[in-house]
Amino acid sequence: MKKIVINGGHPLKGEVAVSGAKNSVVALIPAIILAEDVVILDGVPAISDVDSLIDIMELMGAKVEREGETLAIDPRGVQDVPMPYGKINSLRASYYFYGSLLARFGQAVVGLPGGCDLGPRPIDLHLKAFEAMGAKVSYQGESMRLATDGNPLKGTHIYMDTVSVGATINTMIAASRAQGRTVIENAAREPEIIDVATLLNNMGAHIRGAGTDIITIEGVERLHGTRHQVIPDRIEAGTYIAMAAAIGEGVKVSNVLYEHLESFISKLEEMGVRMTVEEDSIFVEKQDQLKSVSIKTSPYPGFATDLQQPITPLLLRTQGRGNIRDTIYEKRVNHVAELARMGAKISVLSGQIVYEAPNSLSGAPVKATDLRAGAALVIAGLMAEGRTEITNVEFILRGYSNIIEKLTELGADIQLIED
Ligand code: EPZ
Image (cartoon, rainbow, N blue to C red; front, top):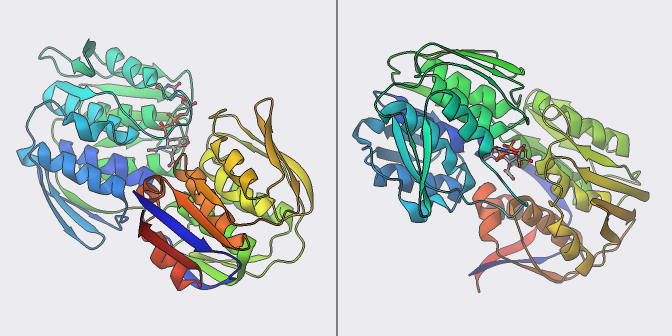
């Protein structure tokens, strides 16, 4: 097992570059199965979710070449075989293989997806969309089989009962090769959805309205190769901006698309955080006194659920009190107990997180319970006096590329060690 050891209290200074978006690339890679030629992705982050997806693609017969942040994927050798079970439940985003295998082969036999412990993470909206397009769902032990019994998927009209990033993207992938038109209503609007639509359209698909709540897809027979630059990771960017405000003395966060972070930035401004927004970077000064605020997450363009955990340590050094309500994952509170072990005046009260500030944090042994909870603990460890040890760091390495190198570069005293 690996663990992260931090000796806190060192102010951060300098520049950090944000990598490609995890929540985009985990959909882009499975979507490439639909191409009848090589697809090249640039700006691919060095995260373990990408390693897992490359393993799965190669196990299924694709040829993958990786050169730094560039992936060249030739999907022509992909066979219509059951997905490699062991790898599947290592990441929830493996559900994106359902849409692309179903569209290419008319069937998909997959293990049920895994992922972080954020409470129940159903896939009913994905399955409802596939069934509406003519697929039948059956279960064989731990595997699930989606099949169209030889007929092509049919375009249809789908209303998403809940706004869902995954179900929106998965339906878009499947519909791009279906017969006829598919309309997705109440679609999610996250930037990653636009990124996947851009890739598919550059492969020859006809997708309109990505980024709005109505997406129209005219199915096509064939999709060809292309080259695509992954969008920057807005959640990694928000994590470093919060960190820079919490413990920085002048940090430039670069490769940032400001328009992907508007609700997050306005919350920081409400706290009084002083920063300068430039073309594709944000400079965060050393902060004085900041004001406590409350946060309620909501689907994009609202405040991202993925940022409520990383911003929490920053809230702990403001003046006042506040609460955080995650309307998307009520149970996304496992980091609270760990922060309390470090001396934070924070707790969960009838489904929402309440805190008082300021707090002086002290280093302690803590554990990452999910990806963004882990990020919050890293920030708290950087702020705390003394030594913090974080276990279960595999979660953090799934979504934050080169985090040890990036933080060391900024002046942190941080190490990743084999426990
Ligand atoms: C994506 O997960 C992200 N993951 C999550 O980021 C992010 O928190 C989430 O979107 C919400 O923004 C990836 O993109 C790989 P949803 P996803 O479908 O697609 C319910 C991170 O830290 N729902 O938008 O799985 C669901 O329970 C991760 O990077 C259904 O009811 O989330 C949730 O309450 C964590 N049925 C809500 O919808 C379904 O079939 C939104 O989930 C699907 C979802």
